[in-house]
Image (cartoon, rainbow, N blue to C red; front, side, top):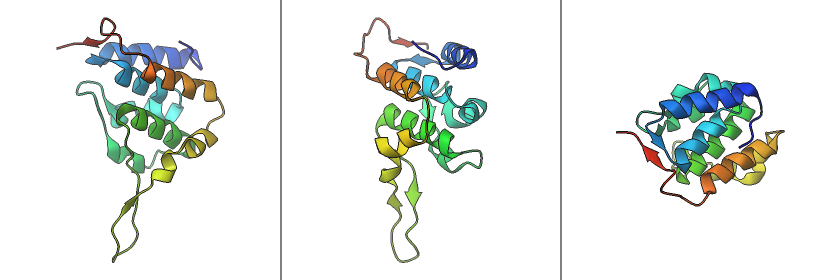
Length: 137
């Protein structure tokens, strides 16, 4: 596994220890959220390691920047294949998902070190080896 910095490595190891579920989904989320300073600092607002849940409302949080949004969107999409941004069309129309914000072009444009995004994808897509999956009761 490659890490951008020692801070990223330490963040990943510390939060993986805290996680109740240690599967490819949670490992990928923890890894990806450790790349960006803003997502590291707001990790507990983004992902709950106790319940293994992402907190979708964080997409609209004031701390989000274009870089942290790219990390958050990729992590969320790899976690459960969905997206959470919503475009409010107006009073007479329904809100529609901002699916375009989750395309590879949109996500990868906002990040310089793509190798870490690809590492997060690799972690998530590794063939599930049940002997490596750990759930702590």
